Length: 162
Image: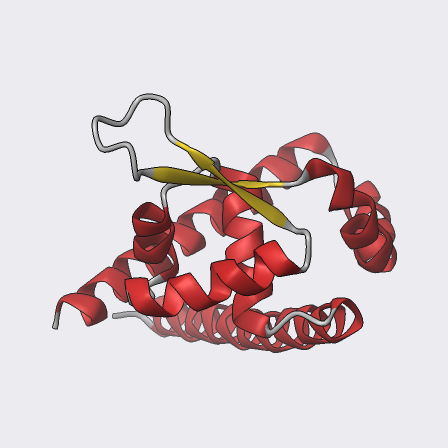
């Protein structure tokens, strides 16, 4: 390999390392933000995570939610009980199920304002950051984040499978 090619390879590895380090820092900061949001709302971190999954992918059965969250169904029961007591979700009979005991879980949209208010600072800052990029750059960033999220999902599935 030529010295130019070798130098290019080193720069690329350093750039990739900086991206991975920045993603770890982003993960830490978002975890802290979510923790503080949860504290303000009297929700555990896992409760807030599950509420987000329900809001984005629901209505869901408790079993489907447990699979998405990577949690045991018995653990999910306690989480759903807390979210329901707090007025964040409702459990409803699943009209399409053959088993009359089947339920789906739905987030209560009227509570969204409380969440939006607590995330407003971060959302406003993200809007400012995005304003500094042109449309093509935003597309690249969105693609990178989508692909990184997919890689995380696959790695999680591999670890969960043993």
